[in-house]
Image (cartoon, rainbow, N blue to C red):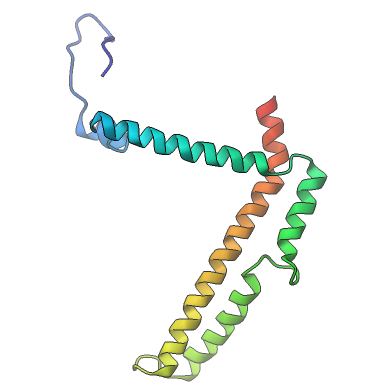
Length: 146
């Protein structure tokens, strides 16, 4: 808590639970916990800065890098996208044409396909996020340099 006061008549007052909640509990946590949190945040911020520094800054290079990710060496979609699409189609057909409420190989297969589809979509999402970062990086560098 700061020792400065808004006015000479104002008494020192504690941080309210609502104020503490607004800052994710950091106002009232123990000092060692606050330092640990700050260190973790600093580490994450450094990692993000290193990631952003690794991205191309030239617009032409950014476009080429994004296209390499889009093509993924296997077509025109990011890695995981086509697999997720095919798995989703297979899963839809399995669910439509079988009784998946009962234990058995059909249900296990449907669960397996659903899991693989989710994993593939997560991978595709990561690739799309990276593409967005790559394409946005020249503008970010320009804004931060201004």
